[in-house]
Image 1: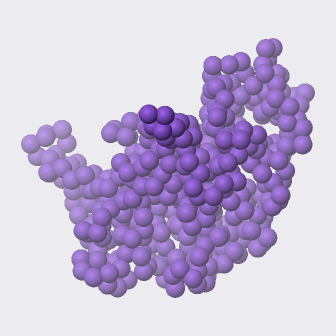
Image 2: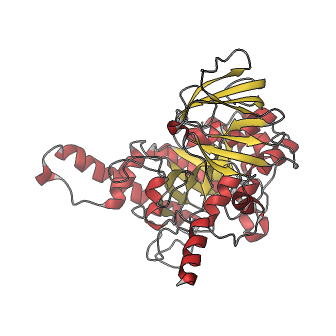
Image 3: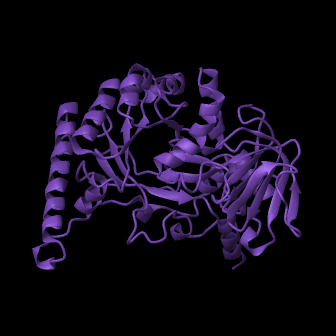
Amino acid sequence: MAAAPLAAQAPHAFVGARIIPVAGPEIADGVLLVEGAKIRAVGRRGQVAIPQGATVVELAGKVVMPGLVDTHSHIGNGDGGDRSNPIQGDARILDALDARSDNIQRAQAGGITTVNVMPGSGHLMSGQTVYLKLRDGGTINDLLVCRDPMTEVCGGMKMANGTNPRGDPPWPGTRAKAAALVRERFVKAQEYRAKLRAAGDDASKRPDRSLELDALVEVLDGKRMVHFHTHRHDDILTVLRLREEFGFRVTLHHVSDAWKVADEIAAAKVPSSIIVLDAPGGKQEALDVSMTNGAALEKAGAAVGFHTDDGITDSRFFLRSAALAVRAGMSPGAALAALTRAGAAMLDLADRVGTLEPGKDADFIVLSGDPFSTYTHVEQTWVEGRKVFDRADPKDRAYQLGGYGVMNDRDVHWHQGMEDH
């Protein structure tokens, strides 16, 4: 299904395409030079030296742009915290993901190369997210952005307010109680951090270890981004107050009412990851969701990205989010950045992905036409110099055009083998 990694081959020069680097102006008749897992050069044909022996791939009439970054997804069929408590920061989504799920292949077919996979939003804090590269691989370890999940921060922290985490005790029955429970837990985390700092290297003085408070200390120390599900304008402002009180870094997710409080979001210098194709009939607090959110946040000067919340929006339609935002007044340049560079920054990965620049990971997609055209298809998806999706391959094409029941090719072979026995 996928080509061999370019690390095992000669350098590859992709030539003749309209290149959208996002880091700078578009390049007509461009050259993208890839060596191993990294981008070596980007520029106009004739201005980029193509090494002797390089494999030249002609892409005249095509568009090349960075791989898409989905800042909020639920691919991999994971879960998160259970119903025993509304705050469960110790739960890790990476412990629940199926790396062989066919929705990962569908995301590759949509041009997504980097993704933030989230626990659900039915808790005030539903657990730790994980940042993945959509490489081909049979285990979750093959997809992790980090090297060692036991020693590194491999994702953010998922939080939510509004109607999702409300219920009978111990769940909060009101918005005010929800905020109070969150504040109380962060105060405990501050106290825990103070004890850890006071103990220093003296293990006998350290408090009993808490997996949840360990993660919250990472949040307080700015090592772990909070990804906060919030819709209504008053709920958005509650998140901004919590952020101001406890000093954590936060990305607002969904923000259906962003157009009502865009200036306040911009003043707080907080980024927003918006969903354009939402389902307002699903919850009352999303009734005022507007496709103008991207334009309103851009006008206010706030950082904005897009997400799918797959399966709210199928990952294969991610490019449509940007197209609809442009139709509603967002500038094309900001919309393209929202699909790539802005999302990379929200995942603390801007030094690796989100733009086509020398030294960055060779994550890119080949499109049949303009990114905002409804007639455009993702033809190829490359992750770190490896082709992980090719529309010309019938097996891959099935993931792009098929329904939700497309079976993973690995499992097809397994089932066929079982039937032979």
